[in-house]
Length: 331
Image (cartoon, rainbow, N blue to C red; front, side, top):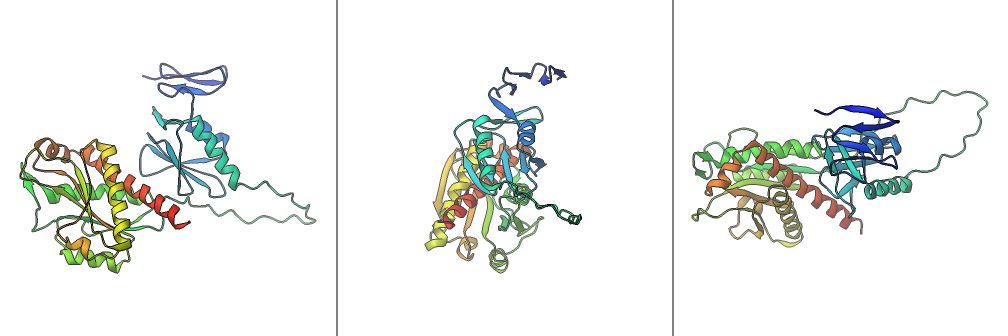
């Protein structure tokens, strides 16, 4: 049980946090860090929730936004990633704690875009100002359209091992990725939302017809060697699109491995001419999230919490790829 008392004008959380001599709040593992609520107040920012329980959006009245994530040593300012080496964002109770170096960087970002108020002439007639229009924060994947494909489905179960059908695992993870990408601002178009079987050509044609920015197909793997395990992603190496697909595939594999600690089998060039990769016109990646033929990995792939971590890893990869792509486009 946690009890909160006001002591000498400073907020103290018994057994969890205390007040330091310079007024900064500290908590277990958060010494030298500042709580998000205090940072928001000092920078005149509003705190808004996202689709992720441990992420927050900070925004001011002019529409300048920060996207802060737990366990990350960076944040996003107006959609661009700001990487630091001064520690990571921590969670203590219901509060996020930010490293002081991150707070200082955020203050500099705001100073670079906020203009000092200009002196106003004294009007001879009092004019009532128009009502303020609320501004919507710019999320990191705003204006990005993703076609998300849950592999197999309907008459095609995919790999089946230990009573687990690949098509069911694919759909469960895809639903989570859909929710998370939309929370990050993306427009997501699923190829299927239930146990149905769109043809491979129909999946590629949907992505092309909707002029999607990305195509992601989610699958589970299988091998004759039962010890095989890990995460990989396949992409087609064809010119500029192939280079962007390869970068996206590597970012997604690294994101999943970071979230799950699964074996990294890396991004690989598609040698089989997979139709959904061959017939799509945008950067496209087929993700193999684990091996159903490996008993321990199969068990994890059916667990809701593990599926959530896989989905977060995929979204991490897309976010990092999109941020890098925006930075390259500006050069």
